[in-house]
Image (tube, rainbow, N blue to C red):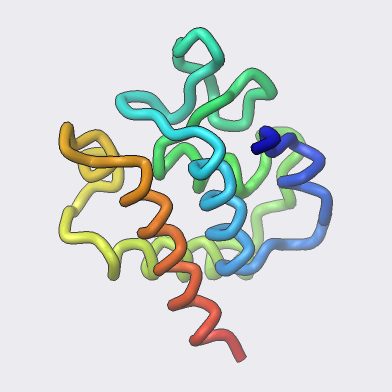
Length: 130
């Protein structure tokens, strides 16, 4: 699998929908997943989720990276906040934990579970879309 790059993630300058945010996060975690950091580089060192050096992402890091890098981000708007909120609600409805970070970092957690959670959240959002 080829690493998703910033042009793949952010090829559209329009505001992403909740479903698109979840799809982007899903694709990142499917490429590489990590624990105890938002993202890691090829040497397993922590990096910012939007870094071009990132090779793996936590659940939360992938959601952050799916939005855009600071300075390149789509301007924050009530609509963007609403889409992010929908994405987070969809994720939270599939989890039994209060913290995305704690859930992701649980020792028994697997990459497959994180991918499945993002896929389920994406389906929830798509079903609710007008």
